[in-house]
Amino acid sequence: LEVDARTTEGDLDAGPLLVTVADWARMVGDPDAAKRCLPQLKRQGRLVEEMGVLHVTFPTWTTAS
Image (cartoon, rainbow, N blue to C red; front, side, top):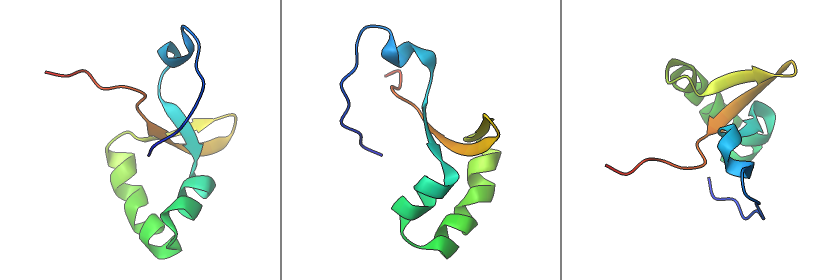
């Protein structure tokens, strides 16, 4: 997922970017493919509920090794 966003100091410290499952499924473009991916995303800990809505998480940065 690539996002253009204006950020200020501290904005990216709060954690991953959250995209609702409904919005993510629209971005995938194929509802059946999106449904097939959900169990794997859950196993990976990439699904979280915020304010009663299920979201897919996307890290804002990754540590290089």
